[in-house]
Length: 286
Image (cartoon, rainbow, N blue to C red):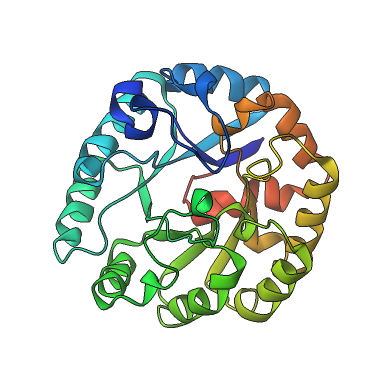
């Protein structure tokens, strides 16, 4: 059974970027996914594709509603049994963030981590953070350190030019497990991505890599790109530090889940398809 370590479900009324006017997004036009996408629909698609367990990753609810998001996802699990773990979010630049994290832990036994997107790019359409070096903020770093007490991971989303700064963050918090989302978001110069990955991040034992989101910039399932990213990641990190993630339903803009899973299944060993995610997100025995 495959573990999907990165997917989203949502109600349209609760995700701000789906409700307002169409804005440019990193994954292109998104009219087809401006609708409810609930756990029951995802579970049916996932089961058919051979996915046995899943990890929900926050879907950019307003940060002031981060606790509401966790409570809603927990209610989806109570109703359907899916997802099997939750990665939430919080305003980690706020001194009060720890209160949100603790409330999330109390609200759901499925909590396994948090994500706050830090990626910044010269192309404004690819930006999320307000600057490339926000990860040096002392309040943010203090809140990341608190994740060790909770036993939670931090989902790290950055571009290759940010890898040196990200490496400082990861190295300075050895008791926190970091997960590099979308394999470090390779785009443009893939040789530069590989070199930065090898130089800055691969040597850090408390960092794992999530093989997800490789349709983000090409807007299709590209077996050649998937193969290159998989081979590079496995070479640099090893299969016990790599894991699969579907990034659904975003990738449904250009493919179905079965086709996406098959593309990754062709290039990844079982360790990366299942065991790594089970260990990092404490998903229990198969």
